[in-house]
Image 1: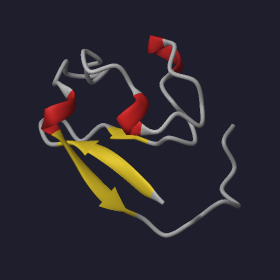
Image 2: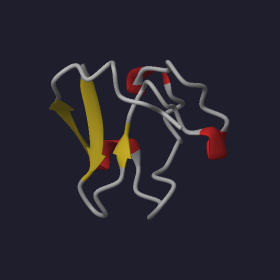
Image 3: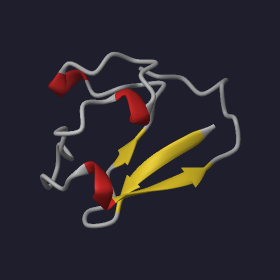
Image 4: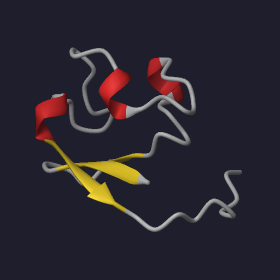
Length: 63
């Protein structure tokens, strides 16, 4: 699994959660988000995100 982390502010886009504030449904891969999407915290573009592999923590609770 991967997360995408904003280089400018550290926001983590987790595809399991999506981005509800911007109508990005849970389960949406970062690559499938519209090219004009921006970081919900600082407004950075998709080019300002790093792809970071993470261990599968599928048992994590998403309250």
